[in-house]
Length: 67
Image (cartoon, rainbow, N blue to C red; front, side):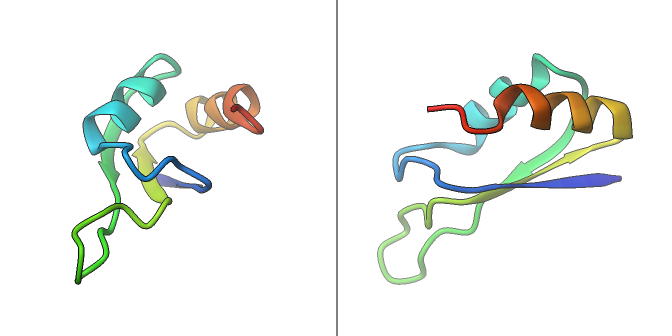
């Protein structure tokens, strides 16, 4: 599995929205973000797992510096 670190996310971002964004570029095995313990809010980063290295590279190329 290839894991992509995704940073600088809006604090309102959800795991399903991250998954749907990356599924455009290939199969997503998992999408997870670690919430803050005290508030439950997103920390602003996530990890996305893909099975295929070329799909991961394509997603990175397309989404890098996306606003």
